[in-house]
View 1: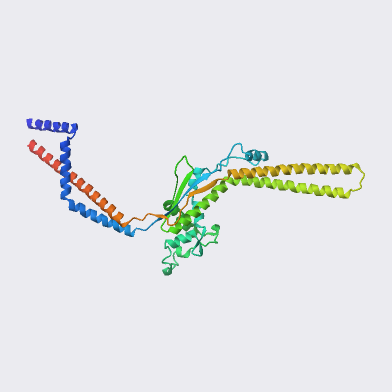
View 2 (view 1 turned 90 degrees about the vertical axis):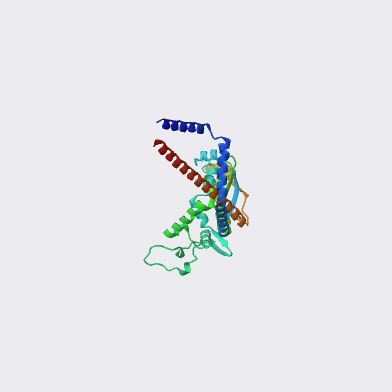
Length: 384
């Protein structure tokens, strides 16, 4: 019993010493112990480094290149004003003024990855070595998705449609697509949105937007980036200015109506005057005076409407946003090519580091296992 109490006291003292911390000498001893262990296993570390270096070299040799086309652009203008003459004129006419900020600059970032705009871009025609085709057809061509179509045999019993049976010609309207064409187009657009298109604002306080398109074909990356930016720009500008254009069209329609009434009044006055050249009745003079009054009123109204249309056109020019390209992609595009030397060095370093980490973990586990076994033996011997 006394021996057990003595052992318990020693264990408590050991725990107290451990709580007080490890001395520098103990730490150096542990480091030295692990260093000697790793040095004894140096050939394992070297072998792992050589193996991973060879894998890195093979990866750099066989890796398929991806090319990235990057645009940087800024958004200028397009800001509405509460004091705008457009708002006051539209309010007088009952056309409904309002804010032009339905699409803000931040929303343009999301528009670039909108599915409908990506699909429109894929269906845009491009010229490839003198042949006109849609971008989705060129994507299918560059990805060699029809490489085995010469050997294709249709299964009459299956309802599935192969890509060899589908095409996306330039003149085909989107509304006339079949269910299978819609599915393929949706699949391609989803893949582009998830894996190929990246967009972000460089700084929240600035209006610079950066977006890039990455693919395995250099020409496709550049063509798709150009056409997507054009599609987004057109949609963005049309959305920002649609209300003003509709009001200008409505105002112009009313002005044309007033102009027709004015022309009709001028013709009627001339016809009435020609039919009563030598009339002596006073009523003739009254009718001519009424006609002159109508002509004067209609002329004044028409002049004011033309003036207001010009003001609205100035508002339209001010409200139209300008998307200015700051940086555009040029050939050769940036790619993710890894050099053979870099692959060898990175692979070798990674293999050596992982092997050292695994050996240290293995030694730690074995040391803890031996320590636990020795403590169990000591407790059993003391209890006996």
